[in-house]
Image: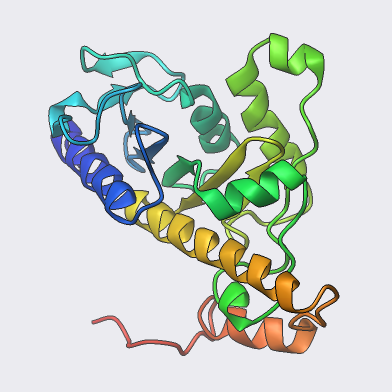
Length: 232
């Protein structure tokens, strides 16, 4: 795609993030990577969703050099870049401070798979990272945030669980492109809300169980998926 198309895709995804109620003020950002060029577009830092334009989206090289745009990219850019470097299948990354997901992150807790709504998108618990160390916080903080996410997914497929809670911070989600990553951010917030409600009713819920989790995840993902319509 052209850089302009990349900027427009990221612009529309950022607007959807705002419209979905996951973002207040300027507390969120979406990026997308062009699979052909490796170039990445991301929301500029601290710019209002109401006033930004497609051309305000900052285009970066894979190593973070600004290729197009006059504004500073999101302060979370180094986190996005670490994820793209680690996972070639990722085409879009989202960060928000949505309330229920942040509540789990501030509690330092994974979100267990309590039911099928969770299992449709996230295979197993949505993990919470370990706390960053003092040295990591005082060093390259945003880059270290990306590294601790990668550390958390050691031995796991991040595309099967397309989201994480950064301890005491908030959620990051991802997907095949920017809109897919926004979709997963919306689902993660709803799953986090449902989990909170579940624990209010029952402090030790049984959970979905392996068989039900497998059924719901695999009917929507993988070679034998049958949910939805066949693509032409």
